[in-house]
Image (cartoon, rainbow, N blue to C red):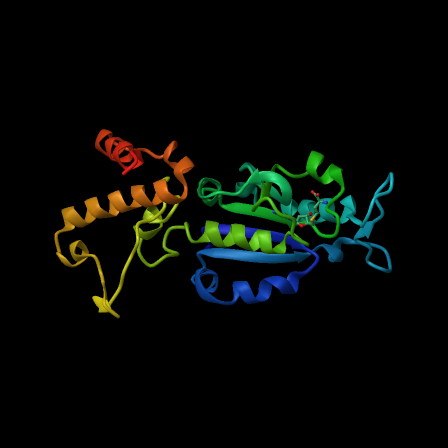
Amino acid sequence: MTSLMQIDILTLFPQMFQSPLSSGLLQRAIDRKLVSVNIHDIRYYTHDKHRTVDDYPYGGGAGMLLKPEPIFEAVEALKSDLSLSQRGQELPIILLTPQGRLFSQQIAQELSQHSHLVLICGHYEGVDERVREHLVTDEISIGDYVLSGGELAAMVVIDAVVRLLPGVLGSEASPLDDSHATGLLEYPQYTRPPVYRDWAVPEVLLSGNHARIAEWHREQAIMRTLQRRPELLDKAKLCLKEEQLVERLKQPQ
Ligand code: SAH
């Protein structure tokens, strides 16, 4: 059986992926053949004795840059391995970079629709600009800060995408309720015991009344989003009644 998604990662540090891919949800998805992840050492695609992957930037400046040749050759080798049926499909070749589009649940959802992703992890000062200009089809940043390499960023992207693939999470419904999936933060949740150190679970959740519980969830999600991330509400899809609730909550008490 072929998996739902194939992910190929180009990196200088293949060992960094061992632990994340061999525990928890990712390992389960791999074991169940829902996703296959292949790690490629960029160094393998060098031809000189010292297996050189980096060089000084033209024009000076601090640090080293990843050379273009091994990265182009690694991606080309991957492409030539694709079966004929896969060749017609668009293959996203994603460079992890702090200059890319800011990763979000929406981008995770978009990527989860593809059957194959290639992720390129930079290192040192980054990669030769020609990789960006002539090889990659997409650039993703996981946030406005600078990491020492693209490996952790690639893992973040993989984790967020794989949990959206059908069958990876236990219940099909759960990713739909998550924070950001609905455009809202998720409502607060409780488990047993019903009273812990005098702190009781909201009574409505114990009522068994599903309609009331659903209404409470929705209201709480809206309130929470308003308190913590009000800018998200501008894009959330709210019905008239919910918009009125937001207006009421915004009034000074
Ligand atoms: N000099 C570069 C940063 C290099 S950081 C610049 O200013 O743009 C080294 C590598 O770490 C990058 O090539 C990239 O692959 C990865 N990286 C660093 N920060 C990242 C971020 N926020 N998101 C995704 N990848 C990042």
